[in-house]
Length: 157
Image 1 (cartoon, helix red, strand yellow):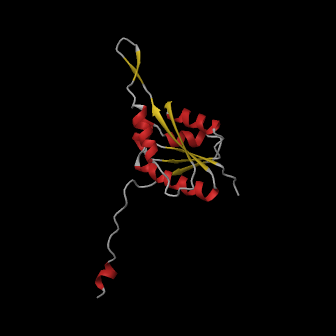
Image 2 (cartoon, rainbow, N blue to C red; image 1 turned 45 degrees about the vertical axis):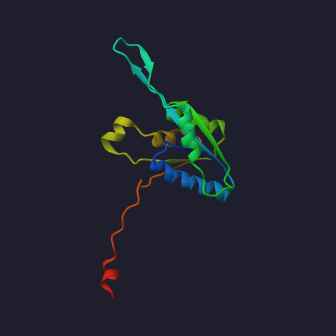
Image 3 (cartoon, helix red, strand yellow; image 1 turned 90 degrees about the horizontal axis):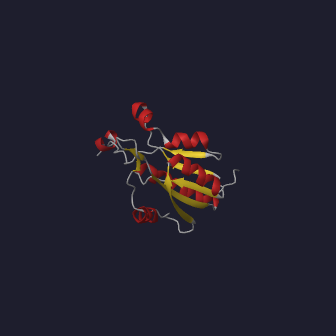
């Protein structure tokens, strides 16, 4: 059995990340592992017409810390640590995994394909390719899929 003592869950606060968070919590509970929830405040450079580089406005840390604090496991036995970092998401996720000796990274994926993936890239794919520990990606529909009524059940009196 794979020894899992530390699980890193990077989140962007999307519904996709929420599904990965729930799975990370279940794994942390079952393995008795510590769960580290990480958000990377992505900073991007903006180039002025004269070539001067200026940082893009970033979300206030207190707002992000409040969002992080709202991510609570259902089971109170799950030990959670929260981290907020600034920078490029893939690099910061990999650094956090190394510095915390993460045994597993659990992150959501938006499942982007085609042109949108080509233009925007994929954080999950880059982490998967470059991480030194196992990576579990979770692709979930952000909203429950409506089930069609069972026609046979509706026809029976």
